[in-house]
Image 1 (cartoon, helix red, strand yellow):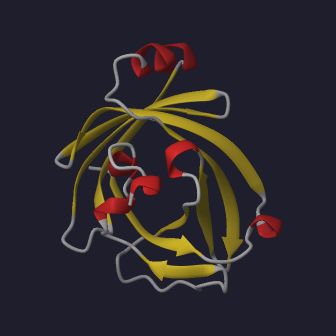
Image 2 (tube, one colour):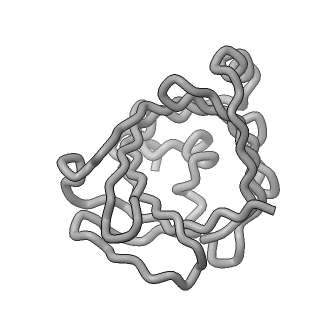
Length: 155
């Protein structure tokens, strides 16, 4: 079983000058219930379908399965997704032995910038750069599947 372990943070400072890559992402949800979210995504010029299970008590780890599919199929599936689309740019920012994925949101989530870092275990130590703010791991308001239902601008 594939297990995703990550920590999530608000971003409080400039990170863009440190980014090695950026990619536009548009995604929707076929199912957003916590027990199994099913997401379709266009990431750059590629399409993906992802299924995630319910998170651990800390919110740092959960089951994740992902498969690349044709972009045309993602566009077709987006037509039947739940209301709300996530639109963002993802920046890759190396810090020590990890790479932070920093998402700058647009549309109804504009003004929100989140950073995630994937880990090999929940207890793995990481270097926290100065541009990282408050940790929000496990706070469901910051899950993309929730930002689609209750966007940041409505808080």
